[in-house]
Image (cartoon, rainbow, N blue to C red; front, side, top):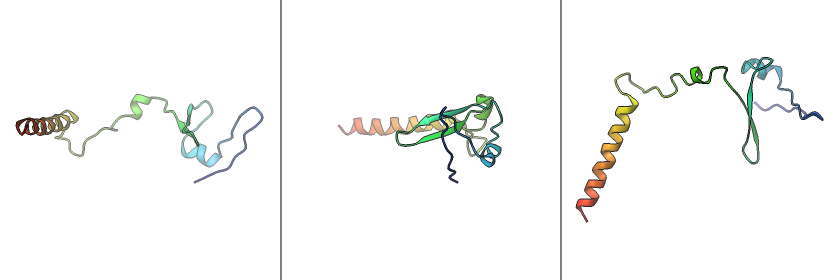
Length: 88
């Protein structure tokens, strides 16, 4: 959903009401403005960044932890290295 707005002489930009409501941008809310070279992005900053990350790295099943996943990957890589060394 693209919206057009005008930059004021002070550099201010008005975020349309529908978008402020959709992203819970109330007076005093913090946002980051990120420069991607040819474009800018306005990103809301959560009040509690740690709480916002809760569940972000959850695995598909409760039985499997990130540690177990990473260890399995390392074992697989180690196996490939052992195989490579034994063929030299």
